[in-house]
Length: 144
Image (cartoon, one colour):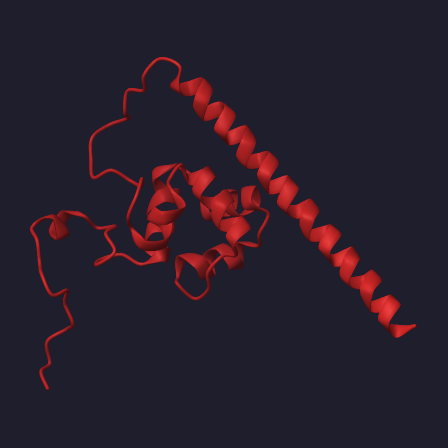
């Protein structure tokens, strides 16, 4: 047995600068970094997600993970991909530079995508309420 910490099988120079790669960062690290890059406090992000502050903190501290619907909202609010949040692959925070220059029309597409994310989130909540009502109805039927 050695006292050396576990390291990935192959080390590349990019790992030294890619703080959010799967080999280096955790889910919570990526959430925290993306939140900070977006200029939001934990309280603001928690409120926008509709979760308690302690819940967001538990995600950032890798104590818990969000459900799929919150994960989708989280990615949308932080302007990163779900896959990047989960495993560090995909569209996430870039290593440097200032704001990217978007091609003409990109703002309209991004705005429409944000609107769709909100609609999807609301639809997911509605489906959840309907499922709950159906379970209650089925339970009443079985109890009779």
